[in-house]
Length: 110
Image 1 (tube, helix red, strand yellow):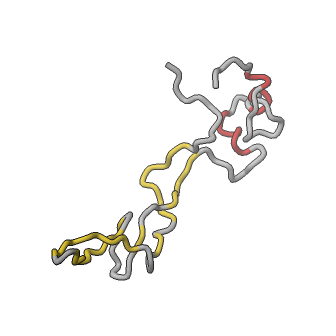
Image 2: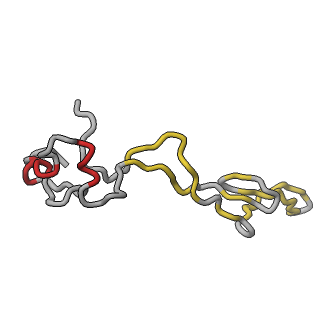
Image 3: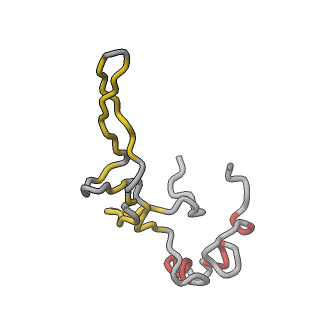
């Protein structure tokens, strides 16, 4: 994961030829992402939600139901996880775009 490779041999997935120098030889950094993939962008605008909707319309990660269990004449409350009739929330729009994990540029070097 170190940075021992040179830029001329580095892989640049958003350019046509595969090198950083060839992609930025005109000096315009913004045109780099538009050379080969016109719709490619390093930003992520949506993500898949990990929340679920239940039958009542409540939104949560997990749902539990309290049941009463009688054991040896003693009543005890127990939580039972509900896994049926849950609908995933789906794709949600991010409030602020984030950078994709596979973006091949170091943004800040300490």
